[in-house]
Image (cartoon, rainbow, N blue to C red; front, side, top):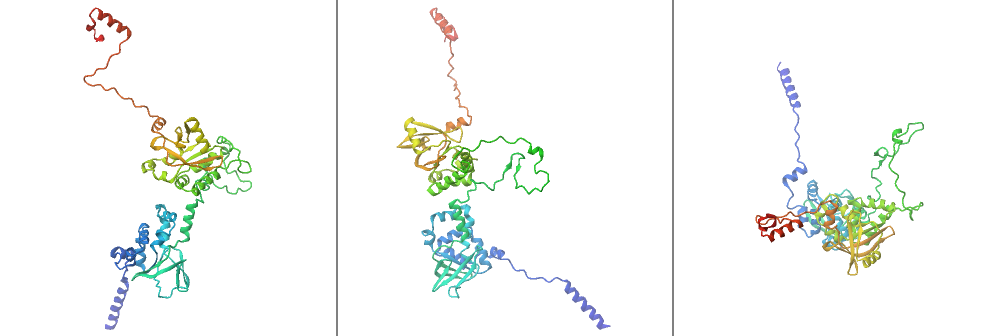
Length: 461
């Protein structure tokens, strides 16, 4: 009896132990470890911030990449290829540097810096690869190769191998900055304005004037199927017929192609130099390029008084914070006439002062002769015409000026319908308003004065 009882008790203990779940030890995540312990003082990131690669360290801080690099160091060793300070100060293209430091290009700056970091440890004294591609933290491959005694990273030579060695990473000094292809394409697209979406809004939604709905590509209709549009919508009166485009040396129908002319005018501003801010506002911040193209296609002509970059930089935040202020500012710089520098100068020489209509109705811009040139505006808000005939094609004329024009305050008040302020009469305790007397009353007072009774009449006093 004892043996079967002992076996039953042993079986119950085994089943109870199997029913209890086994507790696995949990490892802290890298983010939790970093948040609790932080970065070690002997880390390669601390060495990078304290090293003589100060320009690269400043770019890392501006790109907000410290946390991402801390996470990468927490997961394992890293290798950083650091360009020398001269490569980032003097050898780097100033236009490319300005592109990287713009807030809207933060993603491009982050991709460029992460392109210099490998998520593994690579020493120079070990077997440097003869030719291989390594994945960087930016997600793009970096070519590593060796040419004799030279170690190459992309096309840049490693000038200071193992410049900084730490337990969690190593820093190699290279001769110049590495630019990935994606960042170079973003920069080229931004600089050349190849895709002017505001001029040719091919992807913009179109509304059918008959149905007041968004136009969609018509699906193939099988034979004998009912019409896509209902009969009552198809028979509804449409919009008024717009006037045909003006004849001109454009397509085969001899019509002006306003969109192409506006695109040429904007590209001319960019290539001319000094008018990039105006081109940026026309293309990216407003839809004025599309409106100009539509006007030119319909036969209108325009003269653009273009402020240069220095003038646009003097605009304050208050002047640009109001709703629609960029459009209103540029509307005031567009004259619905075709004027060249010669025609405007001859006009102010002959008539003294000339007032031109603008697209910002009803304000007008005033021009007069000053110092052998044409001066627009009055007082401190005046501007000189100093870059004549930047672009002239018979439909659009661009004249460069050195300041941003604003309509006079009195014109703005008139256009807003403001009534003139009338001063109220100030009546004090001692002063009394003088009464008006007619001719008949004055004659009566003279007669009363002859008989000595003038002082008894209050009106004659």
